[in-house]
Length: 429
Image (cartoon, rainbow, N blue to C red):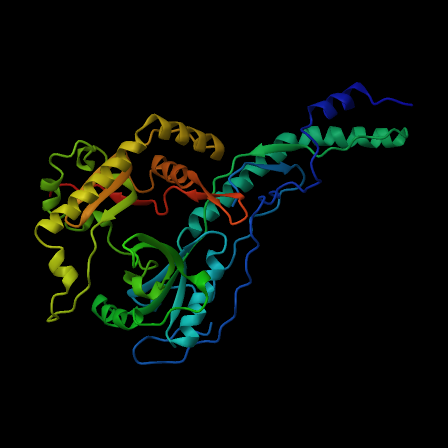
């Protein structure tokens, strides 16, 4: 029996563990990733005077990629219901979905609004640019690896041809490498409108909040409430939240506006934060990242309407108690983010996503209706350090375990922070 040349043997030993044959530039599918549901094709809405009508129109593990030819990044065309500047200055945000099924859920809810309520519904993908930048980064990474491995692959191909000519079996194992991956979760919002001004949108908001609950529970958020039972004991009950009830007026995200720094700052902020040891106002730089808001309950009441029980309740001492409660919650979270255990978790998430480890410098900002927790201080909203911290925070997860009826423990990874938004740090005029 003939033996392989020494160079071929060294190539075989240097190759990683055998894996399924795969073209260069293709990511391996994440284990357990659900298949995307097919998007329905609803009929266009009919015109109504109250609403403008619309036109008819993730695993977190690094991927192992086989080396071959580099495929170009395919840019997905915008959805036919994608919101545009000409749709109006103001809209009503009905629901926002996050995850692999976000687009299918948003399309289904928008189609339901168009067919059942005959109102114009549009779609907005919040982080489309971030996702495209990540795809481009990965494509550039693949191209660099292809150029780096080209001489080796050429030599490997030559050795394979020589082995075949001599009748020697050649162990053809694909050359693979490990590529860090930053998870950019799909985020899709359903918007209704558009309207020429905020007052017109608020009038339509009253009608939207009266729309009936969607039949498909997958379009709603699940919640658990603790209520006293007949015997006085607390009983936990599961329910689904009607997305229309929490709708809000929202500016058209595709319309360019003045920078947030031009907005007026409430002077009460500086008094409320004077004694806060982790005050955001002590930061020297101009921008930070919002990770959590703790706010007191609020009610929307029209002019001339009689005050409700909730409105009368949350005044005076009760309002102070609620504000103090939000301040305590913000302090607990901000302190936890600065702990050693959270620092270890951040280092692990950074190594996992191929990012630079950074400390989670948390800050607190108290305002009239609650308290806000932020992370970091940066020079500008496009500061590379801000963008990297935003990616790091979006790649931090915690595991929730739940025991099924059969006694099996089912684990689920959940994102630590749902929304991570840049904001300017308030300054005295």
